[in-house]
Amino acid sequence: MTGRDGGADIGPIGAFSPVVILVRPQLAENIGTTARAMANGGLFHLRLVAPRDGWPQERAWYASSGADRILDAAQVFDSVDEAVADLHHVMATCPRPRHIVKTVMTARGAAAELRAISSRGLRAGLLFGPERAGLDNEDMARADILIRYPLNPNFMSLNLAQAVLIMAYEWWMACETTPPRTLMTNETHVATKGELENFLDHLTRDLDACGFLRNTQKRPGMVRNLRHLFQRGEVTEQELRTLHGVVTELSNGRKARQKQD
Amino acid sequence: MTGRDGGADIGPIGAFSPVVILVRPQLAENIGTTARAMANGGLFHLRLVAPRDGWPQERAWYASSGADRILDAAQVFDSVDEAVADLHHVMATCPRPRHIVKTVMTARGAAAELRAISSRGLRAGLLFGPERAGLDNEDMARADILIRYPLNPNFMSLNLAQAVLIMAYEWWMACETTPPRTLMTNETHVATKGELENFLDHLTRDLDACGFLRNTQKRPGMVRNLRHLFQRGEVTEQELRTLHGVVTELSNGRKARQKQD
Image 1 (cartoon, helix red, strand yellow):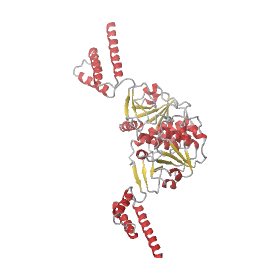
Image 2 (tube, one colour):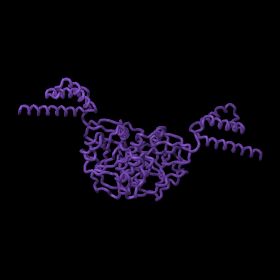
Image 3 (cartoon, rainbow over the protein chains, first blue to last red):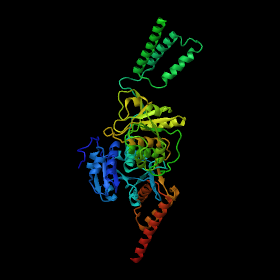
Image 4 (cartoon, one colour):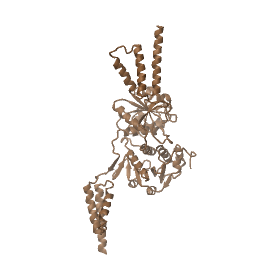
């Protein structure tokens, strides 16, 4: 059952990655966009509890942007109890839980917990309620933990796929090792202090030659300020070569003009 | 210009929260769902660079789920240069940057940086490219920093509003203090060790009375195992009162049966 003939290669499927369980979902489009959001964050196991319009629904495949494999393998159950029977942990997303004694975690906290559960070889499920109504009290009583996203309390409205996306994103981030900041250097490298010094020597020499640094009292401070500027961020070796060229050409232009005068 | 007569009260608008800049957006619906995603994460300033179908577009308001105030205040510019002219920092989201020397940050790293910029009283902008094509090389050259989301590299496809949602969510999370895990106790409180001990005494007494602990060699271990079970998670004072009742009633039932025999 594929609406787009196979879909994308969405990468390796973790046997113990959490199962996303949509409880009584109403719109097939939302099941499709949920699959897309799952693929974004590396979640691959989808279960549907009593989907309103039955299953399969062609429209889900069209809405999934190629996450066909997730929809192809989706399992359908009549009740939450049946859908969670083989799982060891169940978490339920719930924007506004009330009158209930239950552990509540942020999406980020839950993602770390899910990684820990998965690395123990245990299976976890994530319950998402139907559009509008959300999970009912009986559904929530079947969860070990409730997940509440920290979001603008004046505007919590998320559609189903967006709710799944935030959880899938946090699941992915919980094992992500990309440094928060890096300089993408393409085919060059971050300049060493020696390479920077070499350029600053060149610049200072040419600025001496043109007279820009003729005030001997102010000269050390001026040179230091230029150094501060060029030290503020990482510079690449290639950029220093460009700067060498800039200084040389500006100097040559000045010398040429001086000759003309 | 409102399609839904006013929209939701989306909360206080931070003067120095980052500006979301949609560059050459194509579909009005995506501008509306972008506004919704912004409101979720507490971003309120929207700018549009050369929206394909002009502005305003009624359909944006219908897609925004009540984030009207953001759309009402959206500003339109002809070029990226004009849209960023009054900003101090510009970051650009870019899923697959190539052949370019630029600082790249994760969404989380960028959010922390944006909070730091904001707390210095400086204004930052976030560039999001048009659907499909994304930002072009000239757009990216106008950014100080590129933001690349860590996501499943085999399935990076995000729609515009989802890309905005992840950034808005990280902006919100960068100042969020909700503990990752908490027990929601409603109108009771987490039981003290004394309250737990009191219940375990009651249970042990009744288990002694019914003969369950008659094996004196095994008795200490059995009591300890029960203690381990009840100590595994937090228990509330109200739940302990219920458990007291459960033990008492089970005991009374047994005594009543014994009388009948």
